[in-house]
Image (cartoon, rainbow, N blue to C red):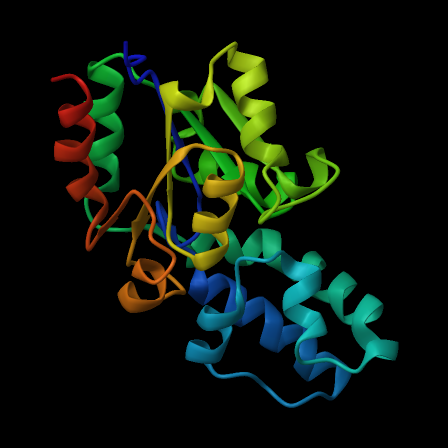
Length: 218
């Protein structure tokens, strides 16, 4: 007998929200302060998702990473308040899922402080039963620790959950946690890159997960 779907776990950046402007602004503020070459917006978008330390390590000399990261983080909280917006269809999707009594959670490689700023600023924190970030687990994505933690906290099994993310790293995370994963092509990875990993499904817009969710109830 198939277990009913009870929980939808979302990645945050590129899946529910567009914070690329804020990331780019903070990154280039830090790089300018440190006298480093600036990074174009598309390069930033293609390199986020692995955490802010990893992002800066891609472009800053090793001896400057720690100081650059501190400047970035000092700037980023304020940048998020003006540089973050919903991706199309997200508010409606969250309301629909809540009305249907699904549990929802966030699994993000962002530090907790910045994730909470985004959720509070967009007034969606109350939708999520669990919010788990990179600084709350031993191993961030693509390891399955966040997803496993959420399942434990909510006393659910992997087959009762669906994970939704926009990056290759999300597909790998969901597969390692044995959770059906839907990739949405609204973020850092292309549809072709996502499909190559053979997730449960690939969709173009976040609202396209609703028919998939409804199929589980049939």
